[in-house]
Image (cartoon, rainbow over all chains, first blue to last red; front, side, top):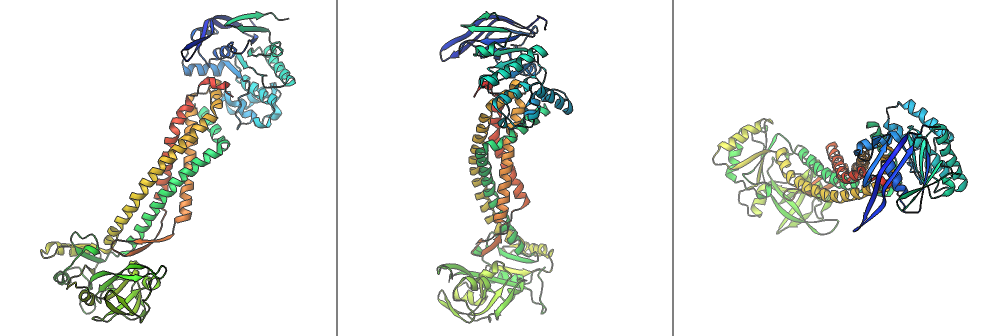
Length: 231
Length: 392
């Protein structure tokens, strides 16, 4: 379905926090490769650094040392502006609490990433419709987040994440706030995006059922990965 | 960048109703500041307009040099003689100069409403006195006879004070007077005065032959210069010559300045309070949208649009406050009648005037408050940490 070329390469990655006088290492000397078209679930106990890793992959946090390469280019040392441009072009984010703008309609929320492109108004509208169509939310385009259920809001958030056609989707507990049935629907949608559209997806979850939708499961524990083979 | 900025700004402005309490408090506090400032400005400009309007350009007022007001002026009889032959002064049909040497003393009157004593101006005028007030007319009775203890009273005096009805005898100080007439000068400051014969007042109040002011009708507006030149070049005269309009404007100037000196500092002190309010509201606004702003940054939006959006919110709230303050002041105060003591003891009745200039000043003050109150919170908005995307 995809070529096996490395999309991400993490080299000797470390992340440390200073708490008072104490320095806490989240992980130290982490190496990892993520291929184009992967669907990876990152699991692990609380505080193991799952979300921190996702932040580093998404360019919203920087490592204490080591390198994050995306398509062979380092992103960990880019300036604020360049990193913002990199995110706009390459990364789509899906959050546990959806992070939709409450005063905007579903369509306006989805349109946000396209405002950073040079697309015309009409082209933006077409792209928004396509994205909403993929997640099955076209008929709710005019609704505000408060008028939508949790699952519907997450679908809109997924549409927002894919509308600018980024290479990677980074999902942080995307079903953490949803009931089982709704969670399954969302995960099926992500699986579809991976299989049909070839999107690389990296998903942080603590839920084994959610992780089972991914092609690979990586368990982060004490700063190290343990890979579990898929059944 | 423009598209981003507009999008984030609209996003921000649309979310104001979600923080209506804080936003409303900011708007109202700024409205109050602007209202106070405009109230004082309306008072000052209304006062000035009334007093400016009362004075004529073709009437000269002469006071002792350096005397800022009638109260502190002394003009000797000899000076009056010299003025009677001065150039530029109009003459009546019989060829006599239209000139009125005047003197006023302060007497007690009993206010009808409160039954308390209040100061009244008792003015001694010559027969030309009325001629120098174009709106002068006798409403009742007749003019006083020169050389007698007879009075004519202004309409306002009759209305507001006891004992001045036509034909009544009234004791002012140690002297008894008879009211023989009631006059009106069309609502000007003179309506609050009592007039009597100049010679009688000089006599009863031991003023010898001195007066305080000399008023003269000029042959034309331009004749003022000739008169001023004459007075300047006449070594026996140490007098100041002003047009009546300039004289009133100067008398009003002190009061106007006083009003403005009270108004601006008060508005300024309140503005600091409003600034703190705006600052607080904007901080609350940025805090409430931390996750939204961080999410926009994660999507790829820059910090600048967040800064502009927060500034826009602050300025919109401030503008709304300024406008509400201006409109409220206009509705409440414009045209409202008030009175105050002018220079000397003359009461000046005037109407508040909310002028376009004052409204512009008020709105500018509001925008300054909004700008200063919004700036630091807006910087904070631009620097929201990206990791706040995960905040609850």
